[in-house]
Length: 104
Image 1 (cartoon, rainbow, N blue to C red):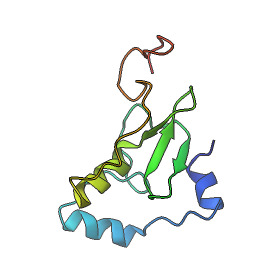
Image 2: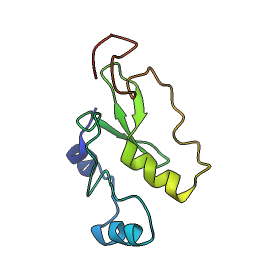
Image 3: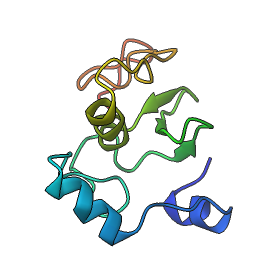
Image 4: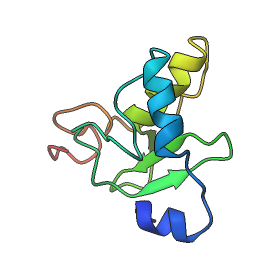
């Protein structure tokens, strides 16, 4: 699993700060997984970049969950997108995990 620095080193090319600000000016989400990540509870989980360019956070059980900031951008661009659907084990819901009963 990788963190953001590892993704950059692997060749993932994020948008620029200028492009990010242009999105804000167009009414897009203010939070950005690259430049202004929100304070969601999955923030420290490893990242995976899918071929769709959606960034996912990988829980302790090895399941990818859409990063809330990444998904917010895709939903802003296309409210009908199905990129949020994933093989969920429940870890992306705050509170006690249904798999291991730990508070994630």
